[in-house]
Image 1 (cartoon, rainbow, N blue to C red):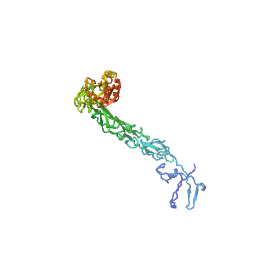
Image 2: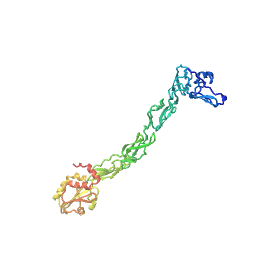
Image 3: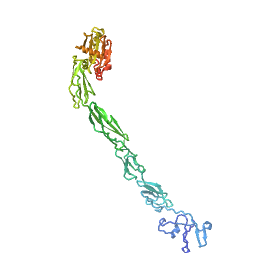
Image 4: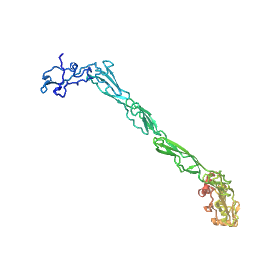
Length: 496
């Protein structure tokens, strides 16, 4: 083995201000020395640590310094002597918020000796950034670096119509509890926990409006029908509606009549339905009851009938009494249903019509029939007239139809002074007969008839006999009042 020489410093007396060392690692510090008791420059260090080669020619790297008469050497890379017995070849590992588990070839007491391998780990809640395993290298450095970073989850977004509160922000194991605003319900995970992988457990919940709106309808009400009507006009205020969530009502529907409508007698259910933005709905209802004051049902008079307004027995209704042909009314003509539910007045009666033939003129005779009876005046030259006999025969067989249509027959037959005038069994005077002929333009020369309405107006003339059906058809089509039409429909088959 060749002989090596130690490098030495120039004497201080020479005035040099810098030191020259061999290239490679810097001069080891007392800590890095194999034996900390050895100081730099000692004979032990020169003999055993950093060794140099023998002097060489200038071409080998040595050259003279003529100024100071001193020899310098080029810095040559030098590999430190490896010693596996040094307990602290590398600095001791100390990881904040973590732990280093080391395995040394020299045993458990050597945690940073040459060749020691350390496994790095972090405390819970921290993540290792860098190498998981490092080794103490001959360069007295560890083979890598690492540190522990505190683990965090991303900030949770806020949810619509809700919020959350967390126990420890976005750190590991922090639990965030969700809640919704009034009127909303939480659907999904109620809590989420920050996990070790930096993610939150579960999924993001949503706040859903599932509560229906609050709706309050008006109170039920009762109203009496107006006089002469079977209905009542009823008003009410709209329902009070409020949404339990955002307060917005998108639609309000009504099933039933609108406020201010006319309601018929009876009970009526009014229903409102309200909808919110989430299409939740709520309904309410109330009842409108309409009552009609009614009087006892009136009975028609014997040989007569009634015609009434409205329903015929409700408050304000008026009923008029009518008598059949050949009868006249005695008593009040009409009665009214009062608010006390009783009829005004007393019921009249229909009695056989009394014809006074002992009057001074035909006008006095006809006035007795005004608005009561229709007149069919028959004139013939003599009782044996063929047309006369045929007409009287047909009319005698249709007495019921004539009475239903309020028709009274007056006969004027013959020539003066034997001329006869009669109404049923009542005989007319010669003066009355003459005036009747003149008023109605009835001749004695041949058969002729005239039909006079209840207002005393002649409506149809006949020069030859006609069937009762023709007379009835004419009366039914042209002369009947509305009340008589109704009566005719009710008594259509009474004469069959």
